[in-house]
Image (tube, rainbow, N blue to C red):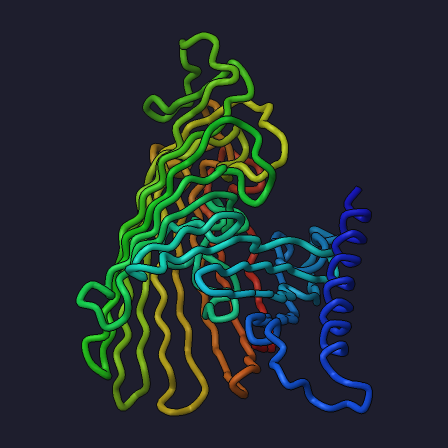
Length: 418
C-alpha cells in the first residue's frame, strides 16, 4: 500500500513538471523567440527547499534520526542518511496562496505542508489558513528546521507535537507593517489533534498563540508569547488511571470506553537578540506545563490513523529549554549551547518510578547540546553538534538503574535553495 502511494505521488510530481515544461514550450515559437506576454505561472509560482545530509554517531542505547536502529546493542554505532529533503511549491494569486511541501529521503516520500491561505483584501489584517501546517504553539515548532541551531527540536515538543504539523483551520491576525500594532500576532484555530494522520474521531482541539516582537533599535530585538492548547484524547478501553500520591490508581467511573480524556497545555516563550563587538548574541527559551493523556509505556501524543486501544494514563508534565547562540564577530561562524528538560510525570521522581503502575514513561530526561555552525555560503551550512543525554535513575526499572549510554554526535551539511 505504501509503495503504491509513493508511486502515485511520484507520477503526480512528474506530471506537474511535464505540464510546466509543455506550457513553457507552447509560449515560444518554432525559432525560439521569447513570447510577447510573460508566462504568468512562473510569476506566481515559487519553488524552494533544502537538503540535509548527515552522519551520526551514537552510544549503544542512542536513538539516531537517520538510518536503522542499532544492530548490536552492546556497542556504539554510526549511521549516514538524508535527514530532510524538502521541496516546497507556493503558488500565490491575488489574496490566495496554495502551499504544497513534501519530504524526500531514502526512507520514502512524505507530506509536510498542504494548505490554502486566504488574506482579507480590505484591512490586510486577517488571514484564514486551512489544511496541514505547523501547529501555532510556542516558538520552536514553527521555527524552520533549515534555520534551527540544534539538529532537532526539544524533547518536550517532540513528545507533545510529533511531526509538528496537524490538520486544521486557523485564523491569523496581524496588523500591516508600519502600523502601531504590527508587533502583535495572534494565531488561533481548531485542529484534528492527530498529527498529519487522518481524522479519527468527532473532536477538534483548540490551539492559540499570542506573540509580540519588537526591534528596539539596530542592536536589540525582543520577543515573547503565550500559548494554550485545549483538546482531548480518545479513551480506547474502560480503564483510565490517574495519579494519587505516587501511584497510578484506576478511576471508579464506569463506561469510559469511547469517551475523551482532557489534553491541556500552557506555554511561555521568550527571546532576544543583542549586537555587540563580539557579534550578535541570541538567547531564547520556552516553558511548557499541563496535562497529557498517554499509555502505560509512553507519554507521546496521538499520531496514528487508527483510534487507540490501550488503557489511558493521565500525567501532569512540565518541560523547558534555553538556547544560547553567539555569532563570532563578523565571521560566518556561531557557537551554540542548548539545555532542555522534559519531566512527563511531575508527581514522582527517582526510585518512585517503577512502582504502583508507573514505568520508564514517567522518568524525566534532560539534554545538554554543544554545537558549532559554519555558514560557508548564503546557501550552504555545516553543523556539528554533540548531545549529552541524561535520564532520571530508578532502581526499580530494568535498564534505568544508571544513566543510559545514549549520547549522540551529529555532523550535518545543508544546502538551501529558493
